[in-house]
Length: 98
Image (cartoon, rainbow, N blue to C red; front, side, top):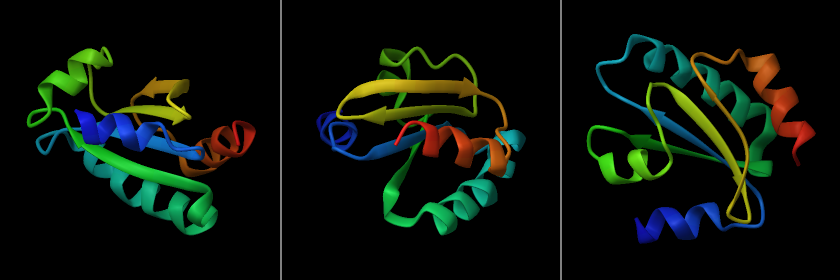
């Protein structure tokens, strides 16, 4: 958890993807997140958390379903959504919070 806390404390956007290996919608989010990273580059750090391996972290952030995306900057949660978020919508959300 200490490493996770230091990651979300960064002074740039950190998008956390809470996922599970068995989750089909999570598998669909992978390529979307890659495309978003290709567009936004270093403006955003995308960090994946497997909820089955990191149950304490998932519980601390009240993750009840996967995929759940949570956007942080300087340790503050700016946005969150469960389910698939399409590339264009996600880029708009990230740009709107930068």
